[in-house]
Amino acid sequence: MNMETLIEDHLDSLWYTALRLTRHKEEAEDLVQDTCMKALIHRDTLQSRSKVKAWLLKILMNTFLNHQRKDKKLIQQDIDEDFLEPIFYKNGHYFDMEEEIFSKVLDDEVQKAIDQLSVDFKAVILLVDIEGLAYREVEDILEISSGTLASRLYRARRLLRTSLYDYAQAHGFGGGEENVVS
Image 1 (cartoon, one colour):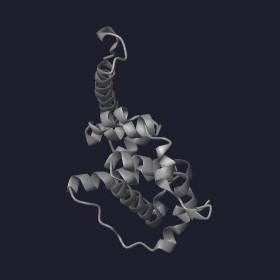
Image 2 (cartoon, helix red, strand yellow):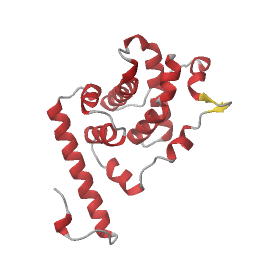
Image 3 (cartoon, helix red, strand yellow):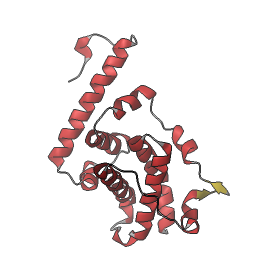
């Protein structure tokens, strides 16, 4: 299997995670494109084809976090479209990432709750709970210890639970205070 095919197999996850992180279609597209370019350029660093998804998400997260640290827009690179065409071309037409992803989008209130999280908390929720990666893979992607991951995940889930509980109460769902898990 060639690298373009491996990337295409995980394009939905890349797009979904990028859209969740940036909340802007254009920025998400830039982030995915940047990630694909870096993956193609650095394909020799992939150690195991069984861990392609984690490797690609690590590239995506590092690219996003570097952008956040520098507090500036991602730089649009000149890209050889013929080089990327096999990744974005599917069944005789360009792959419509937006159409593919909206079938997986979470409810608006859940999205709003996730958006309110800090970047560190949002990253662990996206990678563990939404992408379903193993803790070890997430530790490697974010370059954090298992204790830090566990702490961030616990705190992020607790914040989400509180936020969604408040929403449920405001809209007449759920029981009383005794049903809140802390």
